Length: 214
Image (cartoon, rainbow, N blue to C red; front, side, top):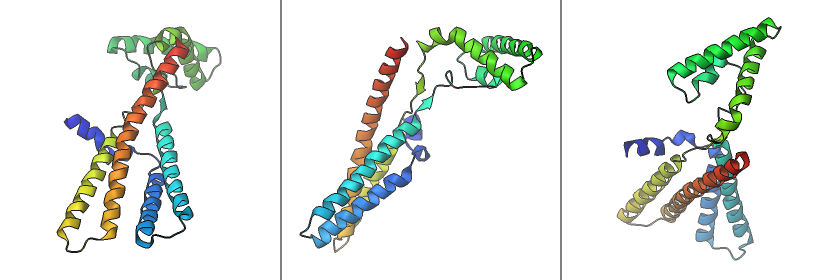
């Protein structure tokens, strides 16, 4: 439970948060205008709601893509120590591989390659030998756990609940508090739905890439 809470409240992991805040702001302002003035012409209201939801959709896609990272096995690298350190090998195997690659790189340097070029070529040669076997058991892409979405959902629900208590304890109910409760609750539900959707995308992406490399 403690591990989940730590991941859930890693709130800094959200990306392009300004797009989400803009979506929330437009939605709140439009909702307030709709409830307070109730204009006969609903076209501009519908357009504003559409812009708000479109921004939320753009944010959800951009946020998801931003969290997809190339697996370290498939990244271009030119530092032997860094490359070996991130491989899932025991200490002895890492040391043996590092020595092998460094010896190979040293031979390439004797042939006239620069130190950086030699290290890069040694790593690439190793990848060519191991790529086919390792790629069948390793995801080319590293997807995020997306637990921060649950943290934002909990915060949104908590804020909505707190505003509801404040609204009930005051003698005069305000439209502003009501709108903020609804908006926070709606976006809280959306965070949970997005968490499920992200996990579905992760599974779909993994299956497609796995089929491609099989």
